[in-house]
Image (cartoon, rainbow, N blue to C red; front, side, top):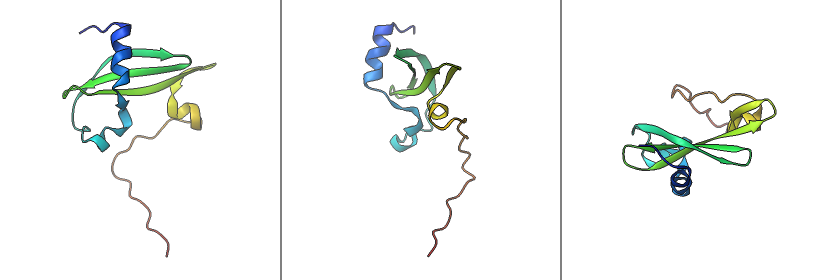
Length: 92
């Protein structure tokens, strides 16, 4: 399905951040990219999952090009979570 910019803006109102899919029990659902909404220097890439929920990832337009939201804040790319990392034990 082809979405109009107006439809994408409406979907964005009901969208949750893509990184929080696990918190909503949706991490196992497949997603499909449906389009991008620009808000100033921010680009919000919209996805829909197989249950019909909407999700978005943010990117930022900088003087050096388009980067992820994480990279715009921390100056480096985000490492992907592979599940092999464990939390450090707390010191007593």
